[in-house]
Amino acid sequence: MSSDQFHLNFSLMSPGHYRAAWRLADADPHAYLDVEHYVRLAKLAEEAGIDAVFQGDSPARGPEIAAGTSGGLDGFTLLAVIAGATERIGLLPTVSTTYSTPYSLARRFQSLDHLTKGRAALNVVTTGNPAAAANFGVSAHPDRDARYRRAHEFLEVITRLWEAWEPGAIIADKATGQFGDPSRIHAIDHHGEFFDVAGPLPVPTSPQVRPVISQAGETPAGLELAARYADVVFAAGHTVAKAKASRDDIRARAQSHGRDADSIKYSLGLIVLVGTDEEDAKRRHDELNATLPPIEYIVSAVLSALGLPADAFCPDDVIRLEDLPTEPNLNAFSIGMYNNTRAVLAEGARTLRELVAHTAGIGTHRLVVGSPERIADDLESWWRQGAADGFTVMFADTRIDLERFATLVVPILKERGLFHREYPEGTLRDRLRLPVPGLQPAGRRLAVSPA
Image (cartoon, rainbow, N blue to C red; front, side):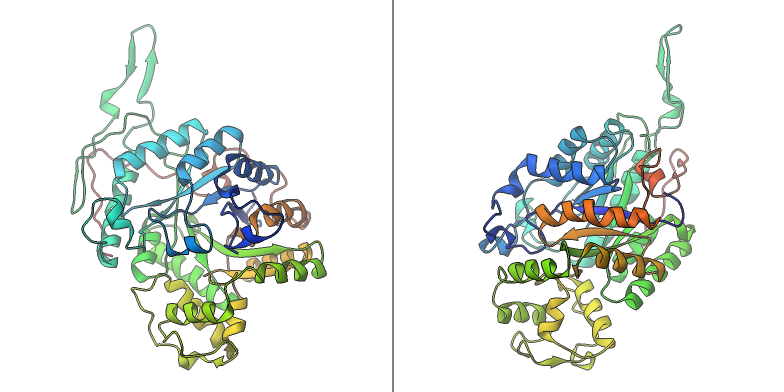
């Protein structure tokens, strides 16, 4: 990929960001558990040259199971299976730093990176669902501050584990019988607030030196975590101005940690509904909207997420910027939803119904509905205005919209020179134009920034 092109990742969430798309007459409600469904999608993405496939995850079931899927297959396991059915595409499962251990996770991803010749990546979250605590024998879900302190230390540990083998540690000299050089393999001897880890891993440094790290989160603590450790920031943006400001901010934060601004990529999430033409897009949009809960229920949920009383406004009431709390509720599930709603209302008052229309019902990311040409125009416009380094594309109805984006939208982007025609050589890190991390000297312990 050249410097004048953007990256593309695909979400495999099924049935899609319209969570009740399983209700459509031709949909299989059980497809989200079917490995053949996911392998088909991943192969379509690989044929289009997509950089990576992404799978969200949560270590606890959410309340939405009454109306649609809630979680599903373990993302690492699913993408490990997909790895065996593909050859070039990157693999980006979501992992929780709150409910994982760093040594075990570091070993799994180092192994995946070896087995896939440098295609491994991980999307790091701190888990906002308090129900997860009871699944792991924890008496109480840690507060946000504790979760981010743990995340900083977690990423320090796994990056040091990944870099603990020096180049040339495997000698494999048949004449002398020496296989490895222990002097080039270092314990990390980490002793911190949350973890005590001796190391090293039982496998050498992998093709990427370390797998690509993605992170999402708009709290100050989340932004600092990303600025220090992330290669890719997975973000939401409902206006160009908001997305551009957020991209500029994360680049500046990375520089404050001694990093090159170009060493961190801003991957803007958006949901697409691809029609064969505008009329087809409208028809499908209407069909998917019919699967949603009543608008009053959605509006109530949106208001609660924004820190307002659930009955403060009716669907067709106008809401203005000054109607929102001046600060987000830091205990809310999505700070991004609050920030993006402020950005939308800063450009003009909207009704609640219009705000809901920006997403696939209740969601954080912007929804784009239209023909392949319209969707290609949208991506090109946002990228040229400096709002993103690339996009993590999610789908209204994944079984339909992923294939349509891959076969109808991507060719337009390639024709315009915006996306690579063939996979570039090298690892996922190479493809995203990310620097190879330098190996840490033995025994070095980085200071952990407070969240």
